[in-house]
Amino acid sequence: MQLSRCHPCFHSPTLCGICGSTADRQGAAVAAMNAMLVHRGPDDEGSYIDPSGVALGARRLSIIDVDGGHQPIANEDGTVWAVLNGEIYNHPRLRTDLLARGHALRSRTDTEVLVHLYEDYGDALVHALEGMYCFCIWDARRERLLLARDRFGEKPLFYRAWGKRLTFASELTALQSGLDQADAVDPVSLMALLALGYVPGARSMLRDVSQLPPASVLTWSLEDPLARVSRYWQLPDLRPSAHGSLAELADELDGHFANAVDSRLVADVPVGVLLSGGLDSALVAAYAAQLSNDRIKTFTVGYDQGDVDERDAARRVATILDTEHRELILTSAAVADRVPMLLRQLDQPVADPALVALHAVCDLAREHVTVAVGGEGADELFAGYPRYRWLALSSRIARVAPAPLLALGAGALRSATLDGRLGRLAEVVSPGDVVERYVHWATDGLAGTSCDIWGAALRQQGSPFDPVADARHVIARSGVSGIVRAFMTLDLERGLPGDVLAKADRSSMLCSLEMRTPFLDRSLAEFAASVPIAAHAGPRNKHLLRTLFERTLPQLGEAKRKTAFRVPLAEWLRGPLRPALEAQVARGPAFSEEWLDRRAVRVLVDQHLRGRADHSRVLWSVLTFGSWLDAQRGTSSL
Image 1 (cartoon, rainbow, N blue to C red):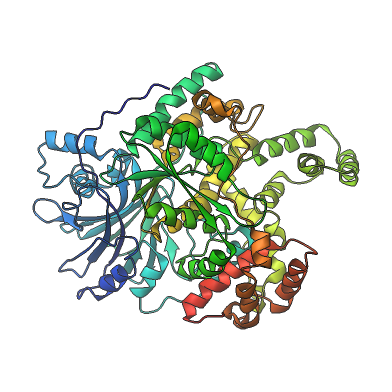
Image 2 (image 1 turned 135 degrees about the horizontal axis):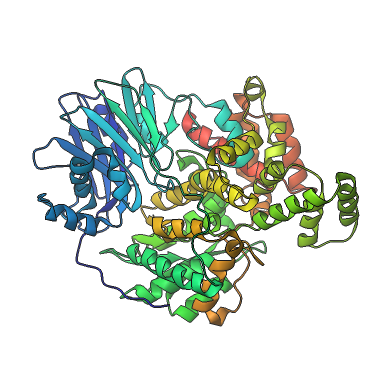
């Protein structure tokens, strides 16, 4: 690993929440939305109201250039205004280029870079940006709005377009505060949440409210007041163009990854690494320790019950790297206090139990740093999920063996005493559709059983959400070839923005902590796409990345199998979270409004509490949605 650090002395800006409306002459809607975004930007607030009635707002969390990053920001003559949520990592180079072309910049913030790039390139400015962002640009001369979201969906943006009006905000609850009314649950999105654990694509939990998809722009103008959404980038399905031995590919990966980590360490405030003990975060920590001028701070979380705990693995990595390491034990008492409050604070529910651990470690980190770096995106870009290789094997077996023989073999495997891997092999050799199998594995079976707890309000819907049909649609639209590449693309399009990045954004921003993700660097991602799939999912999952890991941290030996901030969910639901779960079933609006079937859920709760079955995933979805709906209705089931 050959690393060097040579940052010029530029100031990058802030992490913020943004909002706006095309019909807010008094600024009341923007003021209300800004007030709901305080946790995203506790350090500063700003707004701009155009004579046309278009209003922009921003809240600011100061990371660098604390005194010079006020938003909204304009060009020299005040005809172009911008608000930004996120970071443009390559803005120092862009700023240098703008100055060379004669632009006058008053600050060293990346938000100001946006207005001048727009002057030169219009909507095409997005192609010059490397970062995590959502931004809005108001072109007063053309009376036109441009909204944009980063390539992978690290930063959220919700909007409602109706009639000739458009209102947008970084969070769903903030958007609601700027609207006259927007509290109707979208039933199809709820079906998706129960089946997948998140709301996919451009949908939101509220009817008539959308999310701007990743790598997309939205345009609106007074002359043409329709919200028009178009995509500006997608990860190419390249014919393998990165050639050479595994060692040579690892050399090239080393250079890309070093640049990605280096760009995400730039800050005038302390930076830390969230360390789960697995490959991805350990690799981030190793590069950060080499690149940083200061001793890196690392953080991890453990539990006082269950057999899920990554502290020993994280501690070993921290010792090798000589980091300033801190641990948090999330006790049962803390879970009982933290979880109901956390779930109520979510603007859009994410039914991923790792949210709890990630929020807890972000809370710990925020006591010591303002910026944290994580390993999100590595699994989707480097074939980290074991299911990719299992699905490829299943497809190969199905092509050469008749279905009756496969069914016989699967039955024999199921009847034997098996460990987890052989149990998965029984599923692999069973005859069946590969997309259905992917959905079953990716959702831990939720997709096939979630409809059992639908209430009357969902059963009456004429067009229910079909997770298998949705997966087929995404794969067909992408045009990629090969089983592994197809399902990696599906995870990049659905699970990464809808679950992984939404979970990271909400966990960190509720603590006013900025989360950065080097694996989602554009050059690194495009390199990963150019590598032959056998280098990713060859003799082991994440083969190329593991090769780099074992070269970087040889003291740890072969990289561990995939880990994350896992939680002892089954034990929590039988212990500290039992009162909250029982209260939801007894009194929650999710049942009184007939979104969920109380009798069906009661059966699952009883079986789980008595230890007769583990229904933790479906019951977690119930608790997540019920707590969110409590907050929406201004009630408390506890």
